[in-house]
Image 1 (spheres, one colour):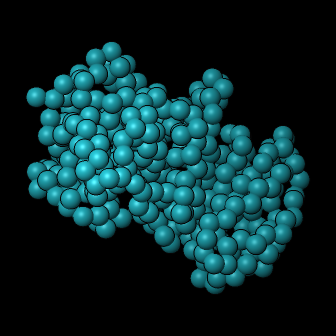
Image 2: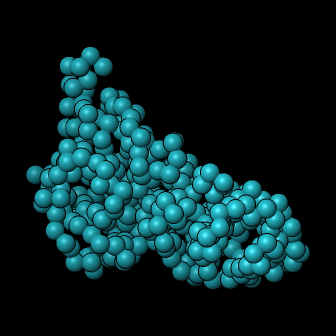
Image 3: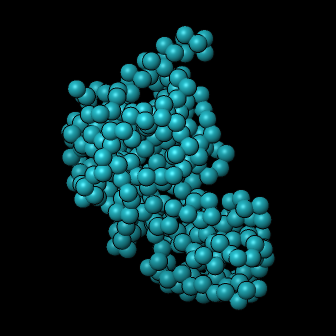
Length: 331
């Protein structure tokens, strides 16, 4: 029977949270490569998986677990890798817990995790992994702001924000792939803001451009971007933000209620265990979506598979095996 001593706990360090969110934002600005990131909730889920992956690497280092790396399809640039233990790629999967009452309960009694289920959204990018590779499930306690009121509460509490506006297809996936060259931007805000244009260059690589905008003044900028997939802003806008492309005549107005805050207010991560991919997909069932949404409303649009936590194997045992494998192979 699984016991709390089988769990490994890591704090949600702000640097890891920020790195995970920034990667998710870069991916969301490239809809041609990541079409599934079509909502703020899915960007949050990707950020949570990134956070779990980075925390797992920290866990391996802290426990001196022998491991190697393989290029990860879960990241949008060459900086992303998955750890390999004993020849098996480890795929951390976040179990985002964003309901405040449940977070409190699990922190007081972490053994409650043993009675819970783990949920796996269906994702085609994970189909490249083999049956012998390992899913590592991480219960990630982190509050999210899915409403304007929740964002305002975070602002009043002086919490960090990561505000995004998702651009429509004519900007993010233009029919004619050519440089935007010149853009005109304006805000109806009285104060100055910094606007970030998240997009792609002529080689379809991620590229960003930051523009400082004075309040209620037009700003013309030169740009090497070929597309803009998302906008970022450094404060919650109380009025529209406009962007105009003189070459195409297109004008976009981002309304104040169309921005999403994808920051994860992380508390801690509990690594509950692992399982072979082949075993998981043979044993998993379709869950009642209401159970998953109680803990994590960001899963509303996902097709899920689930398995009891009791069905997972112990990570401390895997780490001991990793040391034995490494000693045997002379690594």
